[in-house]
Image 1 (tube, rainbow, N blue to C red):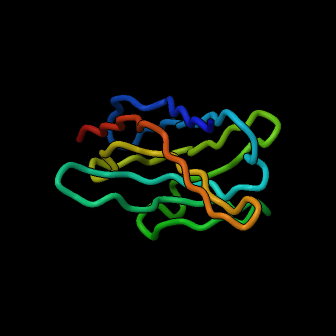
Image 2 (image 1 turned 135 degrees about the vertical axis):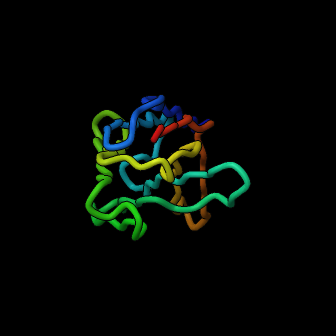
Image 3 (image 1 turned 90 degrees about the horizontal axis):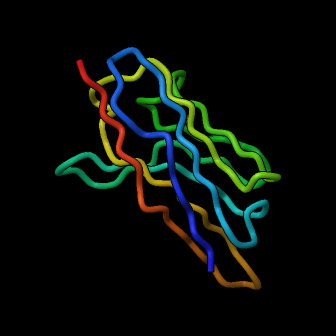
Length: 119
């Protein structure tokens, strides 16, 4: 059974930084695409950043230049370094792991970690 556990959320002032971590149990981590999503109150979940199994990265426009996604396959961990945080970054942040295994797709989610940015 694959489990994803996020950590690193908290309360920070605008302009501050946080580093989120997501540790995955089970197999398939190194061959999976990994992503961070967020959901603010009353809004739909949106993609923030993704890092593919080959290392390429993609960012949502509003976080480009401020957030950095990275992965450590040896530790089964994906990170999201968030700098220059803004109040509009306040949300629950979720990590996601997805891919294909023997022709079948899979997708797993963590339970989320709260990020609150005060003005």
